[in-house]
Image (cartoon, rainbow, N blue to C red; front, side, top):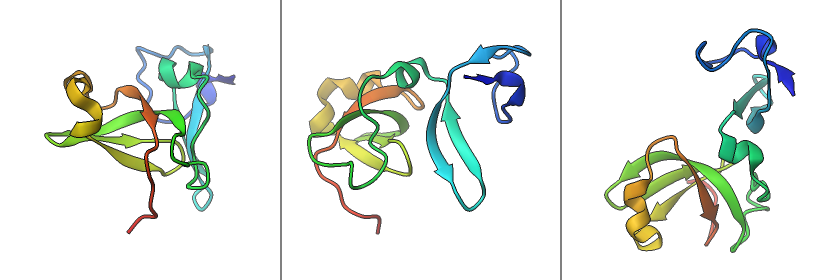
Length: 117
């Protein structure tokens, strides 16, 4: 746990009070700039699913949680841990597409992966 007073970033004053003790989960770390991206989303903080943060961990069948970063007619874009991201196509989502909104957390399963182009 870290004191909210020590955490810089974009947390709104309505959610965080001075001296509050909160739990966060680290989503990614940029070694070059020394910055970390953290989340306070309850689903991600309390998730018991394994963290998939590298291509080596992104084996087909791996389950984790992610955050929806975009919604299109053909599917949703999902950000996993680290800098991993992917597309969940409409054929994989079915009707669940309509229940997902930008920035919502969601369960994710890896079907295949490839390095960035």
